Length: 215
Image 1 (cartoon, rainbow, N blue to C red):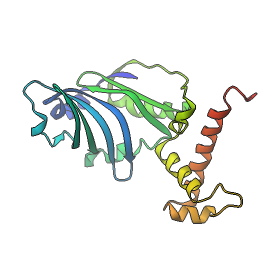
Image 2: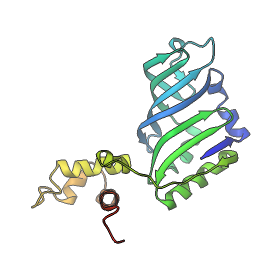
Image 3: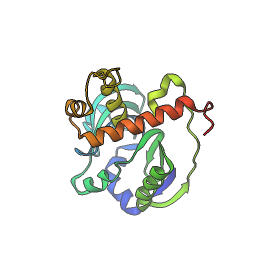
Image 4: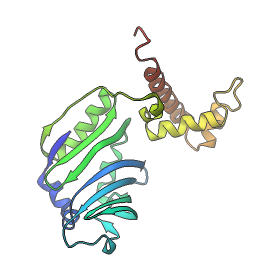
């Protein structure tokens, strides 16, 4: 999706674009919707005369490490702290989606890419739309994955849960751990854990059986 941010969004992001031209999120490593933080791999394009050595933050993004520099382009590991006044809005993005590339943010244009089911994509667009002066382009396509990247079809929570289930012997026969014990091990409710597992198993099966099933 490509969009032009509205005036309120532009004003909110003014401090960021005082020192950079744009930034691209190369990979989202972690999203914690309860604590309202993200850890991302980001490439910043700094304005002329601005030194990365002088910057500990870019707006609400804390620079944890500078991994690569090429002229005014700097690839950084960052932690994004959502401002207090937008935390509730941020939590609304607790959707069954995966953030992917391209994800490019500039002062007058944003390109946002996500993977998900149709109902979740619709909710995501509905949440984004109030921040847009206008949406200039939306495109949808079926995602295609290599089998070696099979886990990339899962959200981070689904991936963490199904790996923990496998590691603790939940899928062994006979099971080495019950669902109640597993939920305590990974410190989430049994209902939430089972929902993550069900969705993860469904996505993995659909990916594996694509082209083989009559459904």
